[in-house]
Length: 169
Image (cartoon, rainbow, N blue to C red; front, side):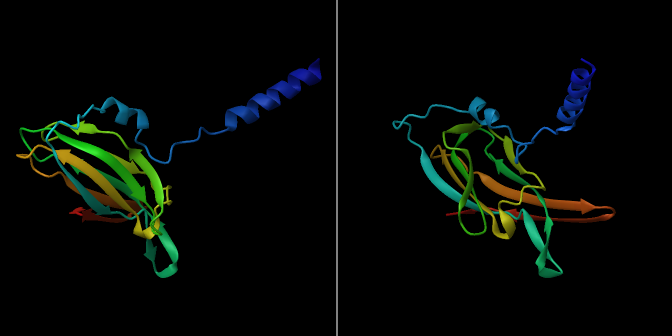
């Protein structure tokens, strides 16, 4: 009996030491579903697509050493009156392979609202040449969304940060 209790205590200690696996992106996919909206084909919307370059890592000193970065990709509705609709958000790696689809159904952004996709520093799936392709729709009188990204990394008293801006495709 004493041996069974001893084994159970050891097993409990090992199982409590196991760390929870964290998603590679801190954006919970359930949040995208909360933003979903049904768009009808009869809605007269202008559709477009935009490209946003991001860097989940950059080279440092040589091509054999990289620094991991946290990426914050922002999707901004610049209209003060109209809602815009994001139809799809895909994340590609340096080789052009689809790494992750954040949403593939219509979601909405209220006037002047910003939503963000955060790629954690430890997520290097995108590599040094990662990018997003966003598909969107808006009213004929609406303003196109703005896409930008901030990449940052800090270590001790050193830090690096820079931004990129999306372009319409």
